[in-house]
Length: 72
Image (tube, rainbow, N blue to C red):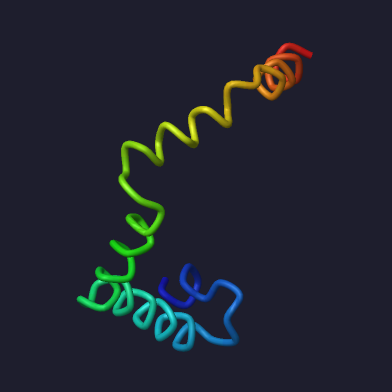
């Protein structure tokens, strides 16, 4: 079952599971957590960043295109 469902695009299932383990270690270790926190806070205060991003998306055209696509 592992061979069937975990191979993905890797040359072998063993290599794919090793890659998943390395990715998991990078995310779960303290260095990964510090990096994640830095990425989140590097642009300044979180609330101000949300306000800046929201102001960029006041244009209704993308939403209108999506609704036309859904209805069409």
